[in-house]
Figure (spheres, rainbow, N blue to C red):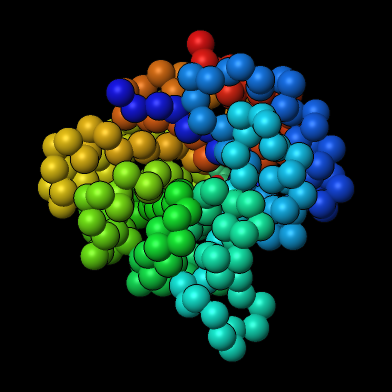
Length: 252
Ligand code: PEP
């Protein structure tokens, strides 16, 4: 059966010293809550410190992006190998803020995913519709297309190291949340798309998170839905008590 994965996305928040303090405070609060995997995706400069602070705990560390080339003249970019050596086990790819503000496309998301997998990272692959697409009634087509394009050329075996985060763009950082029914339905569309591209077995095993203003107040009802296997959490992952409450909801 699928395990819940509760992952925080710190975005551009927390210095290395703040990261250390946060994890030291969080670790005892989530200790033993093993019905879910717990991941914190942190800014590049925090990874080594965060991995050190999380050693011996049930918290895993991830990055927020990765470049698709292995090395070379790509000023300011970070390779998958660098992430692994710094202590990252996961990486977010295709977050809507990268797509919106940094010109990420499904093609570069696909390349980044392949580079991360090749280095042994687990990928949290984000996709989701913008508000105008939901209002136009084309959400299902949009997420199905993103799923196909982002996973192009990736094998069913490799898929085991990918988590999909369904993140309606209109719900990210806005305080608006998809209803549990909307989240369940669209995660279900993604699951059906996986079944079409790969197999029923792959679809059944695929971990699909919901992300978009998930918090301590709404996590339980979102996580109760059959197609929602966890959460990717921005704002509420910056407060240990709020993040712990979401982990608790996944352990209930
Ligand atoms: C995110 O960053 O992926 C996210 C879902 O943010 P928030 O929880 O703040 O909406």
